[in-house]
Length: 396
Image (cartoon, rainbow, N blue to C red; front, side):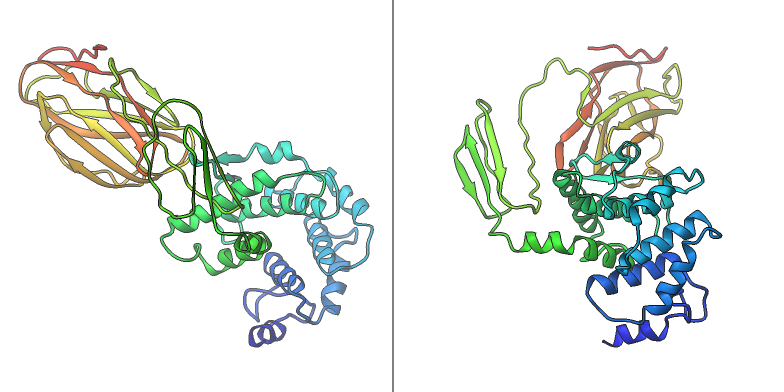
């Protein structure tokens, strides 16, 4: 009640809100407050808000103002011909991507068809199958990867013309996963946490009301479990079917052990290559070993394992502060590089070496993997390195 009273006191004379009581009104702050109060049926002075928004939808105002006014009036339950008025905004060419998202959300609420082809161009997926939407590189409190993805979720939530349950589950998993990565009980800030909880609250209530989480195995193994974590070895033959109850996520990691000979370059979710900065390796002359990692989908907690030739030692044990690299381990035969997160893209790492003995040496395969989901990995082939002449990389 005290917070609601504060909001009422800080409402501007024309019915909207700003960041501070003496500040000019802000569209996103006003819309956030009105939608939240309406969602929880909290009464507040609406007459001036409605009057201002009705003024904004008149012809002498910008398309962005009209869109804001219509969205506010719809939230306030005002009776208008929304389908006609909202459809008229489809022809606007100068909308920002934020305006386009706002328009798509309002269209979904009004039962109008959505341009999913445009949305899907911005769809991204993590290694774990979580889905998010990326529109440029916004970092403001109300426009960033999290908030834009949340708005797409609201669009799917409101769209009665499309069944998006699977996509919404993948987006919810993204939000759950982001909270886990923050190592806290919340997301990055109060506004973000409040928006996520407000949007997901109904779906989260459904999840909390479910029976105890169970995972069922059938086929090569017959078992039902409800205690986690769980680990079991299963013979690598036959088909294993896995299912779960409810909508809350369960993460499953499956791995197998086998001899791989001869080693060939391969990868799932990643690819990795190694090379040297010089065309010749010569005793006592420094050389940089380059490791190029390609990430197909966003990944967190990545380990890069890089063997070094037996005829070389370290010229330097410095680590990079780029590419979200947080730590390196230097052993006499290999280096481990740890990255907290790598988004989709190509990354280069370097290790400074100095050859100390001429000869031909085996260069074992370099490998990259997600530490806690090691089934997403890649490796190079086995190679040979000659020291004393030209560098020759030969498949073994």
